[in-house]
Amino acid sequence: MDYIRREIPVCEVCQRPANQTCGGCKLVYYCSKAHQKHGWKEGHKLKCCAYKINYSEELGRHMVATRDIQQGEIILKEKPAVSGPKMSCTAHCLSCGVKLQPIQKDDQLDFYKCSSCNWPMCDVVCEKSEVHREECKAMSRKNYKCNIKYETPEKTEAAYCVIAPMRVLLMKESNPRQYENIMSLESHLKDRINTPLYLVLKANLVTFVIQVLGLSFDEETILKVSSIFDTNSFDVRCPDGSKRLRAIYVTASMMNHNCRPNTRHIYIGDDNILALIATVPISKGELITATYTQSLYGTLDRRKHIKINKCFDCECERCKDPTEFGTYLGNIYCSVCNSSSIDLVSEKNGMLVSTNPLDETAPWKCEKCGYCIQSRQMFWGNNALKQEINALNKSGPKVFEEFIDKYKATLHPTNHLVIQAKLALMQIYGNYKGYTLTELPDYLLTRKIDLCHDLLEVADKLESGWTRFRGTILLELQGAMAMQTKREFEDDKLTKAGAQDQLMESMVLLQEATNILRIEPHMKEILETKVQDLSNLLDSTNV
Ligand SMILES: C[S@@+](CC[C@H](N)C(=O)[O-])C[C@H]1O[C@@H](n2cnc3c(N)ncnc32)[C@H](O)[C@@H]1O
Image (cartoon, rainbow, N blue to C red; front, side, top):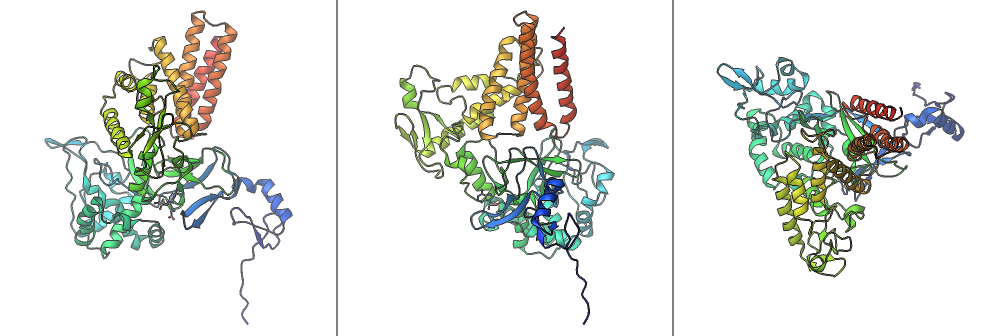
């Protein structure tokens, strides 16, 4: 009889044969409970994979914590399985994803073009990059030449919709394992197939793949790839807005949605590596979640956005709560209570809340007087005001202040539209030309501090912990507070001890902002400078 040699698992601690695996990551072995405990203490707790993928009828595949995860911990780092431009976008480089600027060619402006397939690219380096190789070969083989030309800076091109799906389809030959990984993801093609967008894709994407490239895929497979992108892809952007693409991360895409998620993610380097960060402590067994929508939308808007884009009805705790954890983000004042109220912005005013937030057709009722309106009235009113705020000229603060004032009898201080206006104001006061911290008059400095506090209150309830939103507000708040202290000290309104106390308060906020934001690309140096500036200010008040 032949002797079959098998790898026998050995204990991480004593290297003797072992048959028990780590309950968390299931990747390392132990010979006994005692050695498992020892191994954990000796460092495995830092290496143990923090998640596993489970399945349930209700949620499909989802990510679960295999151990307690600390706030700020990086749960996962992952390279994209595939990336590409958004479906319809202005000219972007097919290789690095940056927005392209035209160059002077003969007597006109046009983009640099790939010498083989004629797609706009940055330069010859991007043209020869690996990411563009297979698609360029496939198009050149059929003598296909892209016909995008520079016309205006913001002209969008629908032709980009073929690139990302084509990359996946070409992987069937070039990288079959990755192709299978991607094709195993949820697509919701049945929900999308008859939508106007997919009718257009049938005409252009399917035609491009079958007739132009001559690839042997059927219509369903081609549209499934597009649908997999729509269900799973992440929107990759760099902070200055110069790069924008969508990418599939096979493991991270297992994360389910929650309207108050427990993670955020960042993209690192030119390879767009996704790092998933715990924004709050996550207990063993808890779902690890991301948000697929905007946290600062009200429930009606969030659920609609998720239904259209991700094809499911969110039933998370926030969606079930008519007050959205007491923020009343998607609610308005009752017009009946308001008409008889003397103090228009009093908290005693009644608020209209949905009688069933999980049913978008349910009527809305005043919590105080019982007055009811139809849900479609809420929809229309909300949409009209959204359009109004989106159309504002965002170059200065006046229009946002006027918007808040104009609707103060309808929109309470934490309504999502007011929060949107306050967020814009927080960014303008202290940062825009003519409104920098040193230029702001005292009353606007106080206004900025109040705005930060209002936003922080909402952030603590809806984006709690180490979220980018909280980090940004804390950073703005500490800067404004430190400036106010400096002025009060210089005007002899504060004693030395009082100034020191207040500056220490700013330092505490800055420390927290630093903990949250230092991992964000390009933030480390900015934060270090701010800590240095504040330390210098502390020193200068101590002489
Ligand atoms: C990116 S995938 C997540 C992984 C997916 N559950 C799977 O099995 O492949 C997104 C899809 O997961 C499902 N999903 C995500 N979050 C959900 C939730 N909170 N409730 C119900 N379904 C959810 C929806 O079908 C959604 O379109």
